[in-house]
Image (cartoon, rainbow over all chains, first blue to last red):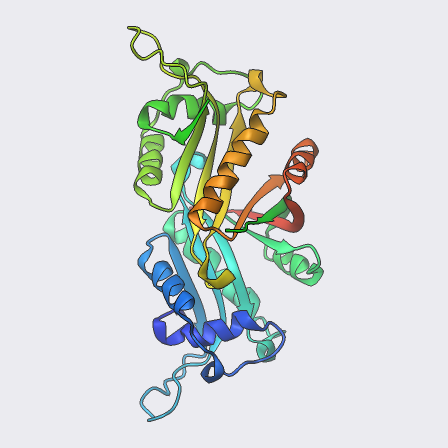
Amino acid sequence: MIFREATRQDLPAVLALLADEDTVLDPASIVVGEAHERAFAAIEADRRNEMLVLTDGADRASEAGEAGEVVLGCLQLTYIPGLGRNGQERALVEAVRIRADRRGSGLGAELMRLATERARVRGCGLIQLTSNKRRTAAHRFYERLGFARSHEGFKLHLES
Amino acid sequence: MIFREATRQDLPAVLALLADEDTVLDPASIVVGEAHERAFAAIEADRRNEMLVLTDGADRASEAGEAGEVVLGCLQLTYIPGLGRNGQERALVEAVRIRADRRGSGLGAELMRLATERARVRGCGLIQLTSNKRRTAAHRFYERLGFARSHEGFKLHLES
């Protein structure tokens, strides 16, 4: 398996993961809209944002017409500068997904372990995330990984 | 009152707010360390991070030896690009503080209202924050402002 920053080529596969959490969507069926292109370019260009993918590492790129590696999971890391913690950045995790047909085999834990290690090596003092209160299995998952469920997470949707 | 981005001159006052939540510290007593200087410069230079202050707007700068405006509160906004919400950014709120001797007069609500409006005008689709589970009064405060307490907040401290 390979853990790396997503490239533009991975965008349909990442959007397929984000679009439906319970079904495996064929990346080839995903329409990449202009808003997606812009948002992905913004993440790629920002030195404090990374869209990361875990792939099967298979090299199918040389076979004409074949897709490349299969994207098994993704997450986004944002590195936030701050005045606390002796000036260390904090890492925020968003958009954690594992392909529906590859769950239950420890891939999620591996993805989170790799992300946490990446944040640690960068020098972050803290890694944080929120998880919807309905997702009780996810809460046990994060607690097993050592995260403390110490905070309430508040969200407010904005109309433009 | 004035709501604006903090300048380097405000840094001691912001650090005084962050250092002690229950006492009013004199900004002149704050030692601004090298890590603080670096972190503040990183926030200032980043187009997706802002340290914002609410001040009394008084112009004492012309009087020799006097400090400028009094900083009544602060918060940090981080604008996070993402592939969801039609490519709209989400705003993350951290480091919300109101001067201990100025609480209970609606300043906190005003600060959060101004921050939410700033995120909305920028085009953010969502504004979010976490609050320690022990701070039950703060939870009611955010709910009164329209935030939904929909998520669990997880944190993991990292050793470098």
